Image (cartoon, rainbow, N blue to C red):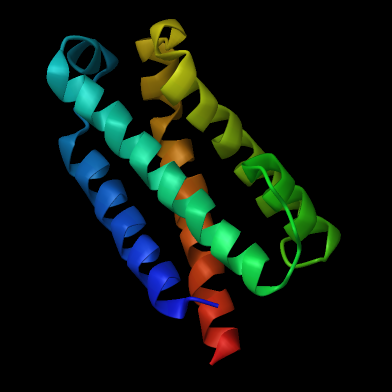
Length: 139
């Protein structure tokens, strides 16, 4: 397992979460009118999700789980009881959100995104917590 790679990805996730929290305005209207800065928030969210999924891929690879897609990685980690039902559900959501952020950006709804941003960040934080506890268990 590339422990250093997972730690690096964890740091990037943490940095993205902080950047989003410190950049997010108080109101949905302000968020919708942010222009390129709003796109930057979406990009940081995508980047954090990507880093979480890449780190989970490192975990799955180190355990020889043989998953080939991000959805498959989440499934395998769940099947092997490495992640619980609740975390699996949250990671499934993040995998789907990543797809929208990358491939269907034009269908994003700023109002819904703003309303759910805190929950998305919480899901990322829970993924980050899992990574850190996994690394501690590997020492």
